[in-house]
Image (cartoon, rainbow, N blue to C red; front, side, top):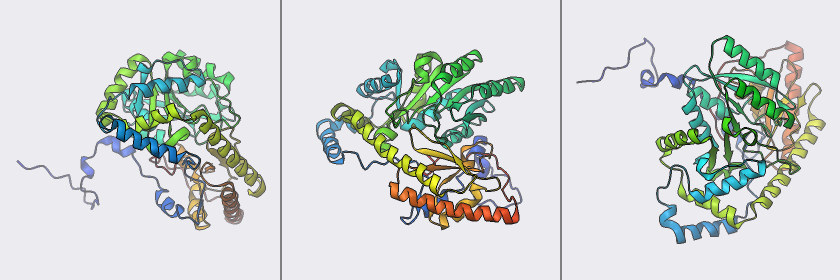
Length: 437
């Protein structure tokens, strides 16, 4: 018996497997700027695009010695399969970390993941059928939008302002979905030092947001990788601390320790935890034991709170550098957010300038950024860009903004001469990558 060949369409397909793919792959689109970032990674280009943590302050000598000790003393455990839920001691330590933001949790309800991106993917897989609605801030994290698209969920954006997610906009989005007969499965939100907008959800709005979701029967997925990176040392009450039974919390060591270890976690209501463990088993069988043991040993032997303080100071210096440079160099008509923590500034440029169309010219001028369209599921954001200040030195940041301002001035001259030539928005998020993380 021979397999039936794919149906001929009269056109030559470069991919002979095209007819075999599942329908859900239609939502998986490659980043249109990925090729540009291969150029942007050159040392002469100042990249304000990628969200890579600056790891220069880590105690590498002591960490390398401890990794060697783990292999020497516990190698037969560290290099073996482990539990799909994660090693118990690390789950206990994670609960201690979350307590800093008011969360009272039991280690049994923590599932360790290969980065919080895996946790987000599992939550979406568990809750979303094709056509279900996910509410997300507009703009939103590109990796989340990629997961939602992969599971064929419909993203409805909810507006932000300088105080984060707007309660009235949330009510309106829920009302419109109900009127259209759509099922809203959950609200996805980054309440602290938002990626990409840089804003923080006002404390007085948090209980209101949760009450709106609970009254509509909508789960809340709280993504909080930056919560301990407030520049004044302040921590905000986690949404999970206010409503434990209706919030799934995503955490990560990528921003507060080492992103390359890919260790994150999900804290979920008990019944959801059971399904997350099953999903984890089908996805990875188990998270890497060695990586978990490295994180656990670091937490138990190092002054990790002091290390986070050092990270905050480094990032605050870089935030100050980029805000100062934006004030000095950017042309009139540009506006931007003023983050109190995290990695990002969200810039809005004058009418007529298209940041996606401008990006190749910026890279030619040896500066890179992430264009705003990648952070919307509906293709909007052409007047916005995300600038990341976490990785370059303050001097490189200032030079990058100076180069960017010159490119913007040229674009604005073109608009004044030829009029608005912005491209129409093209629906569909870009797939996540380290460049847009």
